[in-house]
Image (cartoon, rainbow, N blue to C red; front, side, top):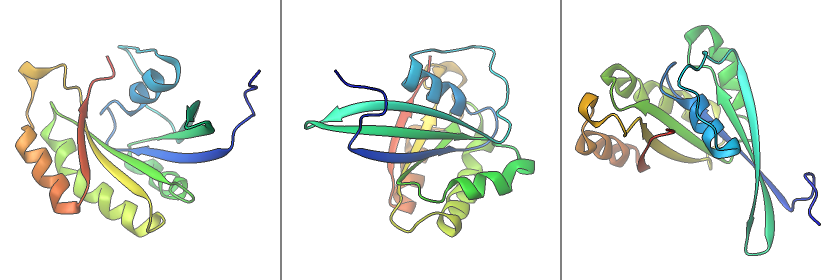
Length: 155
């Protein structure tokens, strides 16, 4: 029997991006398989955990969902400490959130450990008719920073 606290490794991952890009629903979908259409803005940082088994190694994924508003920036910056991974999320239907990716990556580089793995994530891919950021634009930005790029929908 495996207990909640039984794990071999723990990996901290931080989710960052502007307010309203869907960070909380990404966390909720991954950790609890839930989606909430009406989701309130995160205040500070929220946490989620999920245990996975890879090659008989139990890994606890500790995921930090950060607030996207400027007033919480000091809290967001401190959440980078010890992170092994980071998702930089933008909303495919809002060009302003795509433009903010540069700021988020700059902040990440100045506050996170140098070896943190980073993925650029375009969210809300299910809203194709409202899409404002092309896949080519997003891939180009990811390549500019040497990042992997994924598109998702928490729906």
